[in-house]
Amino acid sequence: MCSTSSNSRSPGFAGANPNQHRYNIEQPALDSVSTRLNLEPDPGPLGPGQLGYLHQPEQLEPDVNENRITASFTYNKPLGDGNNWRPPSPGAAR
Image 1 (cartoon, rainbow, N blue to C red):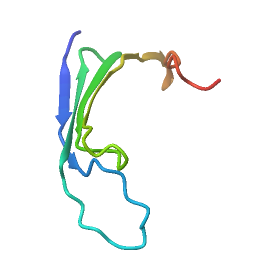
Image 2 (cartoon, one colour):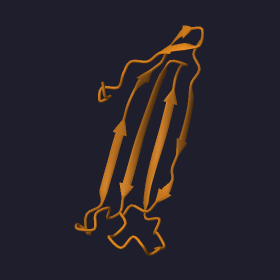
Image 3 (cartoon, one colour):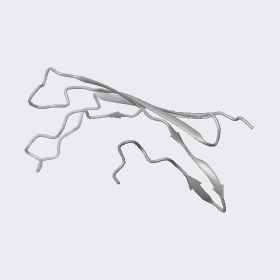
Image 4 (spheres, helix red, strand yellow):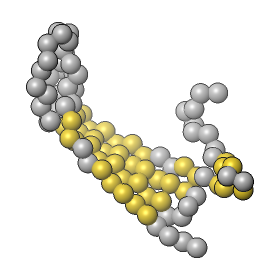
């Protein structure tokens, strides 16, 4: 049985880190955006990917913007009785 599901999200957010004066409340500018897409072709595999644009994230480098791209793949195998087996992520702590 093969069924495909997918979903996506695209939130806006303030890309800059807060300055050293954190005791005052500032109006954040929603100047950055990210998009996340999840593809699940069957109940087992899952492949999320993310794209992001950060407008001037670092205060010491105000003219530098960042584009970020990430992707991953996960496989989940049901073992019966509600148990699952999922291989560890390559960067997972052991």
